[in-house]
Image (cartoon, rainbow over all chains, first blue to last red; front, side, top):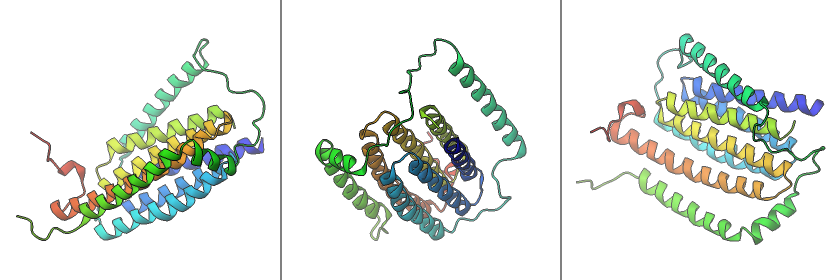
Length: 171
Length: 99
C-alpha cells in the first residue's frame, strides 16, 4: 500500500513537471522542470530496484545532458517576452478536454472483455536483476552493441565540433 | 504498483513529450521534448525488465541513454549554428524547405 502511494506520487510529479516543461515560456524554466522530471523518474527506478539505471540517470542525464542544455540556453541568451506560459486558458481547456476524452476511450478499451492484454506474472515480483547480472549480460551477449556505442559517441563528438565551429573562409 | 501502472505512466509522459514537440516553436524546448519521450521509453523498458525478470531491458536503457546524450550534443550544436547563421531559434520562422 505504501509502495503504491509512493509510486503514484512520483508518477504524478513526473507528469506535472513534464507538462511544466512544455508550458513554460522561458527555456530556463523548462530545463529546470525537466530536471524535476528526470529526478523523479530516477526515484521510480530506485523503487523498481534498478539501482544502476537510477545512478546513470542522475550522472549522465542530470549531470551531463541538462547542464549542457543550461549552458546552451545561457549562451544563446533567448529573449522571452510575454507571460510565464505559452498557452492561453482556452488552449489549456481544450487540451484538458482532449486528454479526458482520450483517457476515457483508453479506459473503456482497457476494461472491455476480449481486449488482447497478456496477463502479467502473478504474485509480488522478486528482486530485480542485480547490477552484476546486468554487467555480465552487457559484456558478453551485448558486447558488439557496447563497442558500437563508442563509435557512435566518437562520431557524435566529431560531428558536434564540426557543426558548432565558426567557419572562417566561407565563400 | 504493477506493470500496467508503469506502462501507463510511460504512455502519458510520451504523449506529453510528443504534444510539446508539435506545439512549441523554440528549438531548445523541442530537444527537451525529445528527452521527455526518450525518458518515457526508458521507464517502460525498466518496468519490463523488473516485472518480466530479464536483464535486457536495463541494457537497452543504457544504450538509449547513450544515444540520448549523443543526440543532445549534436542537436544543441545545430541549434547554436542556427542561431549564428539565422539569428533565431524559432522553428516557425525557419523556412528552408518551403517550396
